[in-house]
Image 1 (tube, rainbow, N blue to C red):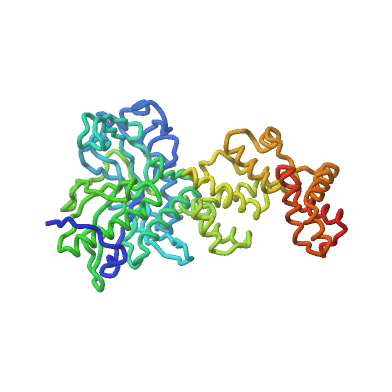
Image 2 (tube, rainbow, N blue to C red):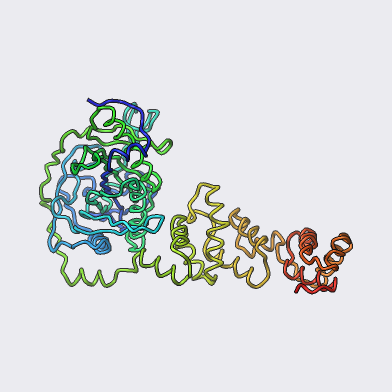
Length: 504
């Protein structure tokens, strides 16, 4: 019997229980064709226009394995420090559901292509936590169901459902962790950091864009609680298809609190799937799984086993790109910044934009300043990620070049960036349209300085009397008169020259 109760605080939950997590991450591979047929995987096509007898499961059709899909799976396994199977095969996972046109999913069961690996993840304070990987296996995605007529968008209450099989058969890699224990009160942070690091790794390998908001990468969060001092895992819940890093963290935290509340109130945890709700960070019951489901796995008779040669595997290992954590450490040393600063850049999703801006000609300090300052602020205010902003690293590099050559000061540069983000064109076009170049004409500056001195005689007298710090007021007057388009340092020099005062 399950007892319904209010949540307990996260701190109270962790005082009595240790969380145990299992994370299952599905990654859609970026292949041009599906896993077992030649249909296109391109997004945005008309519903059911990218299908064929094979991915629709029609009688007499035969699958053929996508070689790039196998290669991508091996790359992922190697990057996760997994063993690569010398021989493995596909299996049929049998179950009826409308978005599976064959009524079975071609997957891998007891013979995955990669197994026994790990991924080290760095937490916000620099601590490194090792997540052990159980397996990474190949399979195919399902179609897409759209439930129409209900209030929630789910099948319950809907008047009818629409099925689009364009996605059916798209290659997936499912990466399954071993039980994650020992994270304690940092379990939500560990889960988020793991998925974030995995996403960076997948992108670095070039096998998928891993855009969670587009469903290209999604996480199932399994969670149970152990009483303090126990070594027996509790009953787990499985929160399905969590599709953002923040949501992974929130799902773990909520389930810890919910489990603790049920157990503390004398209830029992039901083994079930659950739905995560983005709006309030809660989960609700989906489908009860009191007993292990019998999917009647059996070897896929229409596909030959996969037996990657050791030579091929070693060739792929040798060609792996620099992995994200190694790359971050290298960049941190090159840029001369602290681990805390690099962690902040990582959290902001700014590493790739900064690197691209430097490659476009900016110096590292300027590139970091703009992406972590003005652009991060804009992204935060608009609810977007940095890579969603309508500005390119090349454009940011051009802004920094205009600052370096004296055409812009920082204030004007911010206005240029504002214009680019508003769709007014490239930096040079914004400068031209808004008339934002620094006033560098000595004659014009001299007139502005003379007017500032004449209009602030008392302040000028203080400066002549030795109170050089008061020069800031006159500099401000000149900057106001030139609409911020003067070089403040040069303005200060001119004021002191005209007043016959040495700054030293």
